[in-house]
Image: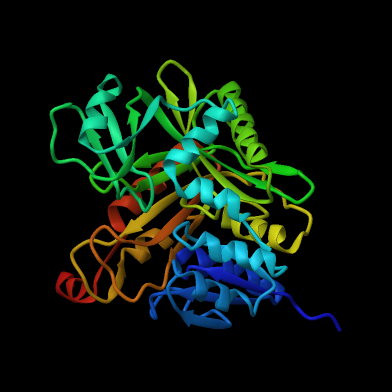
Length: 382
């Protein structure tokens, strides 16, 4: 009897947890490496190892016991992934793809080299170089590595500013954005690609996180087709199997510009768990296993509302679940995090509906009624 291949994930957060939940349907074995002993994957992984994702030796030692190596976060040691590939392991995404994407500067240069439209930018290192590129202002200054969920990003309006990031950064010109979109593309070893409908992302202006998204995006059919084609071009340019979440700006003049790409499961694809026959996590498993790719079609209109911690730190408690579950077509997901903090992603609620009015009413209800708070706050609220 054939042995079931072992999948090793670098990163044990909510993306890994949702991947394992899907993989268990097929009886697959998943090992997880994460520095946090209380990470969301800790309780459901077949093997959970506490270790440094950025340490080359730790990554190689962990991956040596597996057949397939994947990631759920970009901040991992790429040299270690290259070593594992040399040992004959299947590594998705390919190490050279991840190396490019880890560095926002290299990623932007990649788009330019492949004729993929993106906002004007300059690579800078220090205040003097930022001032020399003042033609781009107003702009966003982004650290080239390490930024995540809005961290490592600041707006720059005044060339005389002194409170700026130091070290290698990218200065990206502000564009007149009408909407922020994301398109998921899955590519197999033979170059076959399947693409999901574009989603419309609405951001929390304070936390700089996605507040909620709608699928499909409320854009003209021609624009939607253009967005899918552009995402296909990005995945094709990388030319390696994997899942690519391509974030874009739709400008008020109707231009589509690629912002950045994540080579992994992504917040913009969580609705696919219920809204599509094959979710982003199912597609990722298919890609790892070299199985045929799945059906990306939407079953209905859908939305995903992020549940972000509020009210301080403590043991998480979900408030408003009864009000949300009273709505048809709602699916709460909690990420199994041991501690809630204000501004921390703690879960999401997927909503499905057959018409836009019903969908918007459900989004409003979830946003108004559903909160993750410390258990002590919940007790006082009662």
